[in-house]
Length: 125
Image (cartoon, rainbow, N blue to C red):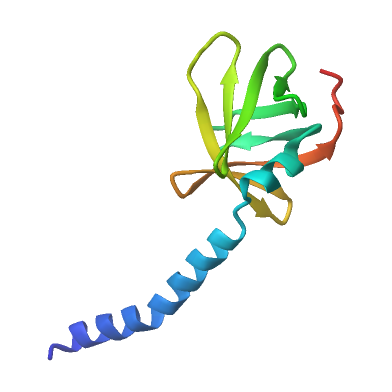
């Protein structure tokens, strides 16, 4: 067998368990629907999305979203938190992953942003 192929197959065999462990770890850190509710209800989450957009939002236990100059509604569908803002009917949903510094917003298996969670409506929106 070609030496390059042997090296590639050896490297792939060594990497496979690491990739599997990372996938299991990522899935283990994802919150369930009930955990999402208890994590964000009556909390302010502040952070930044990967597109550079910073945000600060209060998530009321009644499903309301309050930001500096806007409002919306949030719901939990399965194991995702869904958002609708203002009069725009477009809904966006994210899974939430536990992180060392707060939470991460996950869409289609990719982390799209992060945030710090604080008790109550700390910005008085």
